[in-house]
Amino acid sequence: MAAAHGAPGLLSGVRVLDFTQFIAGPVVTRLMGEMGAEIIKVELAPGGDNARALPNLKDGRSAYFVQHNVGKKSLCVDLGKPEAREVTTGITDGRVTEITGGTLKQGDNVIVSAGGQNPNARGGQGNRPQFRIL
Image (cartoon, rainbow, N blue to C red; front, side):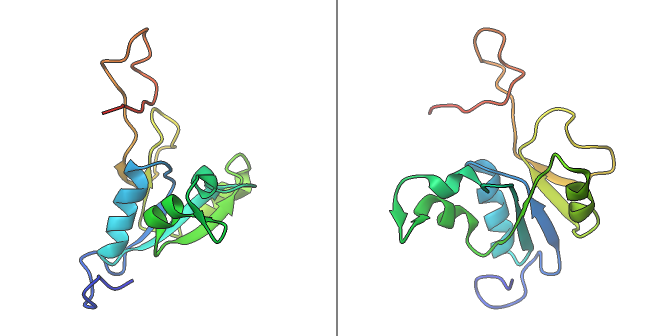
């Protein structure tokens, strides 16, 4: 994808797998796409990204989902199957993920990990993925 102004973007020629959901990751990859990267959003089979069903539907599509995933290609796979790893390995220059901890295997080229932990969480939950109300 060319950058918004039509000239080749900073990330032109870069292909990225987007394993993200919710806000932080999809915004990061949308911005990467605006800078010229080819973004392939990987969604979990069989239903895809849960954001597809969020309210504010127009013509059966979630405005939230469209806003955060505009310009991306989409691939729906069952990541629990070994074949899914074969499909998603070696086709990109890197990955963006919100996965925390040791879920990704050594050798995965992670560009950005948008997942996080909240050291201020109560009840010993600080090591679990968190959302924070601002």
